[in-house]
Image (cartoon, rainbow, N blue to C red; front, side, top):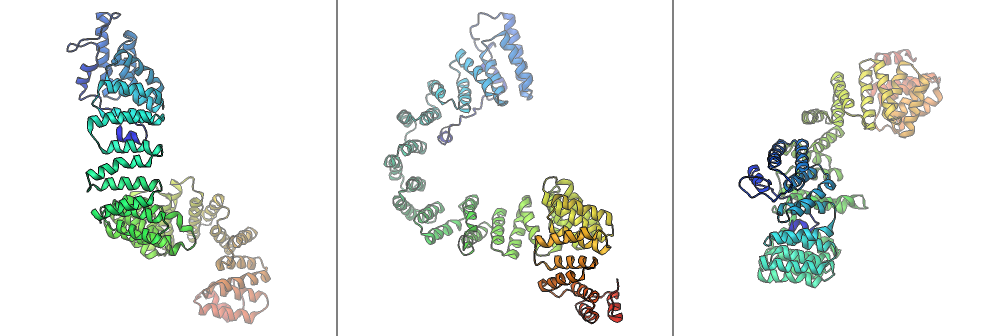
Length: 587
């Protein structure tokens, strides 16, 4: 325990035996090689029965039949209530089942019967620690020290029990005993420091490390520990002096530069702090995981004003250093990709994610980020290639199935699109946004396949998960209007889509067209003019629709003029030619 216990009591789980047979001879109450404990209430016949039962219990335990083993150990205790080995074994089974309150009295009885068994006391200490019965640990460690006075871990354990109880002087006396056994060492320094710092005795906490530095002037770890004590107690000037001494010895040690970065940051010298960080990050000896943890501290700052030229720019530069320093680490490229996305450098982010996936394809999140970017940049081939590759590793990911289905929809391969979209809804049951989007895409597929019933059903399911899915509202409304069906419902959906997103030319065009179908030509003209104003590109469809509206408002010449413009913008419908030639609206 010792070092681990310093950071919070944690009792060791001792290796109990070198072999099963050896253990049996050590613990069994009756055997040929060791003298049996004195027993006055058990007959020879009962002793034989106990011995046979004990072997049977151990056999069940070796095949992980803990319930069967526990049952046999209980039978032994009926025959021989003082059988300490059975008490101990049964207690260990209870501990494995996390039944610590049941294990405790068994072990307490075992140590009463056989007070010189180190394993029993050690197991009991584990129970008391889990139950946070710190007051009872003192006697346990006293007994363990009595049984094994050269085992320093027990002194540390008892010292930390004292520390938790605030009995600092008694803990320090124990550490003095340890020093008599081991001499000065790092564990003792840390243990004593913990007490001195708790008591606010900074100078005393520093003394041990200063002595170690004097004895070992080239051991950088002592400088770092001393600087950390000073820094954590706001003695930054002293910390800076110590780190400067260390830097003179090992100028390339990355931990020294991290320590200096912390000090400069505490002094609000951001430029110097960042310069030290860059030196540390450029050192391959500094573990990449530690670098990533440091980077995580930047993320909360990205929402601050001017973050793009401040925290985000710094984080991006550091992440670039990481990938340059660790070119074979997938996590470095994934982090770099995330920061490039934050910086809106999407092509570079795609490249970073691609490198990360190539190095380690087992991280789903990185694959999804890559496919998202590909879909956002309309790289449909990339979505299909990388999305299908991701699904070969992670077939039950709903979003990935949706992305690939969407890509096949854009390629107008509706059967393939439907297969992926159906997989998405088959594996996802809770994400309403995903379900709504997926059923909306399925509606588009079925419409393209002229399967109106399944198309309408899919749109209805989409809206059942998200009544405000504006794309579903728009598309469903438009396709109903094309069929001249449920125009009032279509108008209501189209209007709501425009309420959800204003100045969307496509949505405005849909609403205008439905109003046209309802013969509300005046309002249709208003909405179509909005669509033409908000459309940054010249739309042949909207232009033709505007001509249709003008015709029914009595402006046939104006209608022909816009029909001709629609043809110029790329419309190729034979109906459009008839409209122009015959100067009238044709359905």
